[in-house]
Image 1 (spheres, one colour):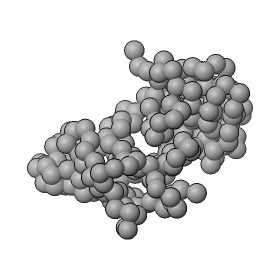
Image 2 (cartoon, chains in turn orange, blue):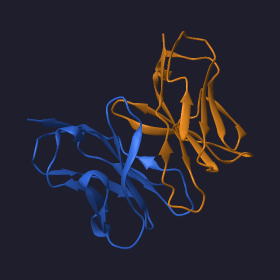
Image 3 (cartoon, each protein chain N blue to C red):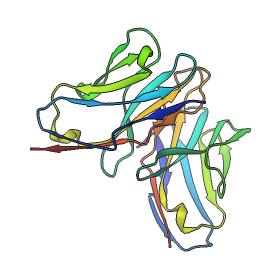
Length: 113
Length: 113
């Protein structure tokens, strides 16, 4: 089984719908991240969490919210999806006190019609 | 704040030829530098990383990278490219204290026979 698991892997939804992307990890890392990938734009940070009680906005947090339900779980929500949120979303983890190397899930492809 | 520039959006090389992908970073102190690879339809895999010590680092799949502080660069090299190296490559920079990694926009590598 993958160390960082994202669900769903693919989702098609309509404008205005609420969407939740979930991430769980078995690496025992305390730090978790959500990045968004768009062609030609690389990966951009949406939100990150250094522990269960810590939530931080990233570069592009508008239109998104997150919840850190447990050390191993970090979910990303789109309260009212819009077409320009169509993208590939990655969850990642890292371990405190290391170089900050990220371990990625396989991605969740979201299409908003 | 850190930033990363990957000047080449797309590179095409012949199988067996050498490869160099460029990465320039901006950060005031000693950076932590990473190269990740994303094969089509896959997540991101770490190729190599630099955080201290020898400025020439070896990675997986025959890749290496050299940290040049004077040029603010961390270019990725491979002496002989294989068709399976066709993928997108991302350079990323981090910092001590585990600030989230900042990614470049990526370089897509195509390999021709």
